[in-house]
Length: 321
Image 1: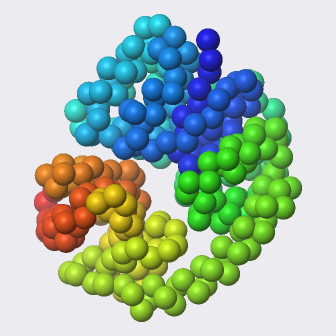
Image 2: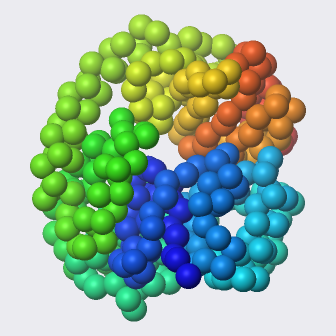
C-alpha cells in the first residue's frame, strides 16, 4: 500500500506537504489544485493512503470528490487537511476520511497539529514558514512555535521560500526537492537555488510594480491585469493598491480559460462567497479565502465576471449578500 501526499504548490501547500512527508517519509508527493484534484487522485489506488493538504473542494467537482474520497476510505485511508471555506452544500463531518478542517489557521498548522508527535523541532519550522506564507501566523499554535526561534531568521527564511516559489508554478521537481529539504528540517536559506531565485524574483517585483501601474484596467470597484508574466497573487495585490480599488484581479489565459487570483483588503468583502455564487453561472469555478481567492472561467466570460463581481461588491457595500 503506497502513501500519497497531494498538496497545493504555494508556500503553505509546500510546507504542509513537507510536514506530512516528515511524518510519512516514504510517501509520494504530487502537486495539484482544486480544479485538478479529482483527476489527479487517479495517481493513487483505492487501497492506498492519501493525504490531501491545502486543496479547497471545488463546487464543480464536489459530488465526484466525495465519491472518490469514499472509495479510498473504504479500501485504504484518506486524510483531508484544509483551511478554505467549504462549499455551502457540505459540512466537514460529511466528508469521508480523517478530516481536519479549520478556518483561520494555515494548512501547515493543521497538518503539524495532527502529526506533531512524529515531527521534531527542526521540522516544525515548516509549520511557521507555511503560516507566514498564508498570513496566518497570529494563532496560538504558531505564536508558541515562534517562541522557540529568533523570528527574524524565521521571517528571512519564509521570505526566501515565498519569493523563490512565486514564479515556479509548474516546476514540480524543484518543489518536490524543497518539500524533501523542509521535511528533513533544512531551512530555505540552506538551498542556494532558492536564495538565488528569491533575489531574482524580488528584483523582478520592483520592475513589475511599475509595469502593472501602466497595464492595469479599472472597471467600477475592480481593477485587473491580464496575461502579465508575474505572480498572479502579487499582481492582483498591486493592481488593487495602485488603482485604489476594492478588488484587484490578475488573470492568465490557458486553453481558452482564464485562471485568476483576486485580492481585497476590505474586511466586509468575502470573495469566497461572491465567487462561489457567480462563477458557476459563467461556466467556471471559484472560491478561497475571504480576502484572497481564485477563479477560473472561459475567456469569453471574463468581462461578464468583472461585471458580476462589481454587482456583488455593490450588494455587500449596501448591506446585502
